[in-house]
Amino acid sequence: MGKFVYLNGELVPQEEAKISVFDHGVLYGDGVFEGIRAYNRRIFKLDEHVERLYNSAKIIMLEIPISQEEFKKAIISVCKANEIVDGYIRPVVTRGAGTLGLSPWLCSKPNIFVIADTIKLYPDEYYEKGLPIVTVPTRRNLAEAVNPIVKSLNYLNNILAKIEAKNAGAEEAIMINQDGYVAECTGDNIFMIKKGVLYTPPVYMGVLPGITRATVMDLATEMGIKVVEMPITRGELFIADEVFLTGTAAEVVPISSIDGRKIGSGSVGPLTKKLIDRFKEYVKTVGTPIA
Ligand code: PMP
Image (cartoon, rainbow, N blue to C red):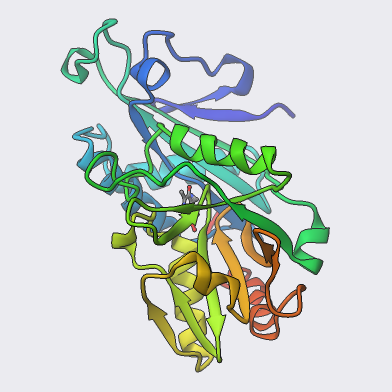
């Protein structure tokens, strides 16, 4: 059976889901989006993702013409139509079709679409042995310019960092902020463990407030691990006992080395392993049913 896309109130066959070349999402990256996972026929943290989508939209003064409840129903409907069991969902709201100028107020109305499919980011080997990563020259967007708390369609900052990582032979990049502190990776948040304490940069360092990040912080606290949000330097990461990344698509990824420095034993650290196991168990038991 063919797949469907939710587009402006309707479920349309994937091949027929089209928007205008005049859409400012296409012309200027003017819009917002989310990435959500479904596990075991349930949508993980649906409320949190929809809330973040509306927050992103509010910051860029994009009024989403349907309510959060209607948006959730739209997400559920496309998951149901595509018979999603374990999947990946991409809700997008663009500014809509406008003129060739920048003015968002000349755009007719936002386009809303939701894709429900599957995703695999990294090969299994990286989850078993750890992923080697590098820091890159491109700085994370300055919060006072394009605030990283907005999950906007303008991902060029992250894409440039990803290209630099690839050029250096790595799959993922650590991005440093304007002040020289560790911010996040191109599509994931970063954590380090030192003497049994879990550290991650605060959101004001210029990071997306990740929903996986929040989940892992909650699970760690429940497991009796102390969690501290603190500015982190590159040097501190090099001498950490363990480092891992979190993100909806990537989930929890152990890091084996950073800029050629082996992290801990150079494979999956013991606390990281525990957190990965707990995360995997947790995601299967919660979420909004696709029914
Ligand atoms: N940072 C950036 C830049 C991202 O794009 C993402 C993934 N959306 C994350 C962090 C992780 O956020 P989440 O756990 O909510 O997917």
